[in-house]
Image 1 (tube, rainbow, N blue to C red):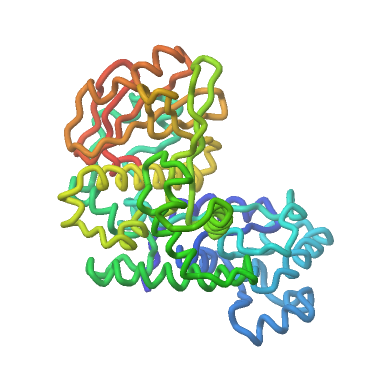
Image 2: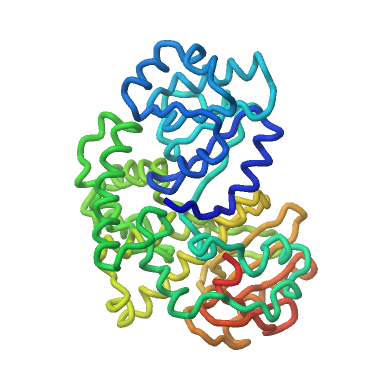
Length: 409
């Protein structure tokens, strides 16, 4: 099977050259094993029962004679291996010894914090548009932070408007890329059934009602790209507030939910703290609701919400993979008169703000919320970006540009 380059690859290779161990985390099927195998000299697959039994009995002995780096795949199947790796690193701090891969936050018995300073965590997210074509983005996000919209102007998207919009229903999970739409969505629904039931057993063995959790996920998926209240989701899923909060926590720990917190800044008042609802891959919500490309063409509001989810997730994926240190949130004033879909707080105190629009062509009117924020923040406002499924990036106003999604991710 052909391996498609991931944004994480170069960063992972570098970290292994300076740290004893790295941990690749992500949802089931996101490509953790394929990504890690490229750098591993040997592998212990803990989803293989005999191997897991051997490692559980004596982890140090299982690793002792293997060439380094050793990939310990699905490490959470034998949680005690975490402490064993930590002990081996304490004895030998040489770089490039171990790669661990496992589903997001699935282990509750291993003390993850005990690996601090020893095991470097790296999130692997569903593939972005450029990763699906095995190419680098046309514009580097780091250049936007340094040079503002000058890094963007004139950049052309290698993806058509239709291709960019189609990412709302086409998942970035590598194993599903080549499937036709009907097969693709059917496979994603089966994926959700399996991932939730299997991973749920690992993080909450006493939680039996998988069907109710699936119903909660479906209700949550209807709110992607909105600031819907928890009560709305609870009522739709027909669960109590207490049960809904438990399900929400479980889905976060499975890595399927990735909410944006409300942004705060002492220069702006009356900002809501309610999070914006997002999934790690909005195509999962589309498949779960049978939202095909044809159906979404008749529902612009839903399509726009899903496209916002795609833009948010893929920008976060690139920034996180490159370890840019950006902290993400969304802005919404209490009265709703000012909303910005994605705010990136940069390590140096600067801010990049992203508004997502479904239109292929945008104008200065589409950037009015960005203009307001620019005027409030002054020099801290590094760039405002109206992300849309167009062809060419261009200036809209001072420090504000319209940019096709396909140039960034």
